[in-house]
Length: 66
Image 1 (tube, rainbow, N blue to C red):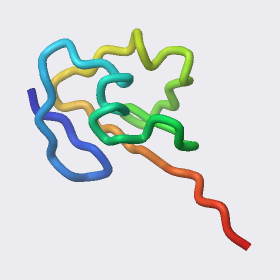
Image 2 (cartoon, rainbow, N blue to C red):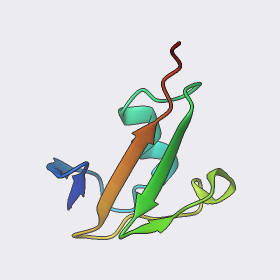
Image 3 (cartoon, helix red, strand yellow):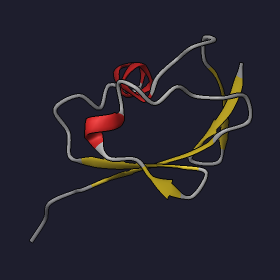
Image 4 (spheres, helix red, strand yellow):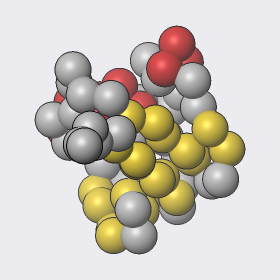
């Protein structure tokens, strides 16, 4: 099925969750936040949150600096 990730089209499997998307994007261990359709989804819900056709996902990574 087709979703958008940071404005770019992306194919994901039917029944994909935010956790599977995080693994596909290789974000595990990183500091990040995810919004789906302009609503923040807490990390505690990533494994249960199933993606739907046409979802708009925004991933924001925290980058340290100084």
